[in-house]
Image (cartoon, rainbow, N blue to C red; front, side, top):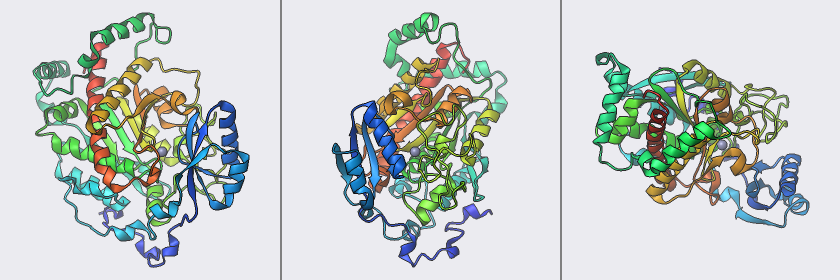
Length: 487
Ligand SMILES: [Zn+2]
């Protein structure tokens, strides 16, 4: 068995957990919410953040921006920029455990078939245990997918979840198979899956109209993968401290797997798509947040500055890399790396997508802000040629999400919602990876707790996101069929 299966930290002996001082403290640090009303203020804030190496909690945008400010820099910050800021979190340390949380979570045996697992956050070893358990317990539905290795030598792996392989041998003609599924779907009366009908005839006409005459997409067919089954890739954990991401993504995997035999809607999407779910892409960073510093965001690769390790992999993807909204400073949380795809996490996922060739959906989960974002983030003069379908898919997802616990998610491109950010995953997956439905999602909350979202919110956040994913998958299939693509 590999060390990742170990229920406790493999390198536990290298850390002195009894010494509470090993876990970074944030006494007298505050998270401020700044009101940014125009571009000039935004530029000024960007410069201040860069100059003082402040930690941005939300993305730079016109609107509200959350920044972590240590007491020692509060004066500079106030005089240089901001009278128009309010305090979101008055004392950050109060929300952070005194000792490494790995010490507090000692349970090794989990029953993954009920929701108890989603009442707590879990360390890397426990999340890996979950993934391995799902693979072992459901061999007909789930197989193991290895993505690559991190700088510290951890294997990044996940689950391929697909029901079609159960029937594959019986089927000789994929077209026939999917037509049969279509008949099945017409008989369905469980409501929610009929996303296209909800948007109605009008949307169909609009789509065809704009396909024929629309300025951005005239005479261009949407991009599409070339082989079956179409794949939807879901992952979280590019940013280490965004713990809600891996929690939600493991829940989605659990629901797809355990819901398959009994839930008609889930069975349909799992038969139609291969879901590849990777709970934590930046495992080195995630482990670091459990052992050393709860506020760590980047990966753990060395940089040109010895005391400032870590590249922000979500500013390091290779489409229009380093063209704005990322930092050249290795000590900055948004450091974009020395060159495109220097971050192993971005590189391994991009290589995986390129090799796969049949990826139609890509969902990269982050926190926080409650946003369902689409390309582009680097060049804000660009609009994807498939923009209408992509945005509509986002709206369908956000609506289903809202219906579960009434949480509002804003839908739109990175450029429209948060200004500019280059080197993000979804720009690359759409433009280079040919993944039509590429989304970056910022989960709960809107800033009350930020990255320190209470554990009581894991389950509701998971439930609503699961609803969004299933509806989005149904939408993708229906929309692509409308374009004449076999599904
Ligand atoms: Zn993030």
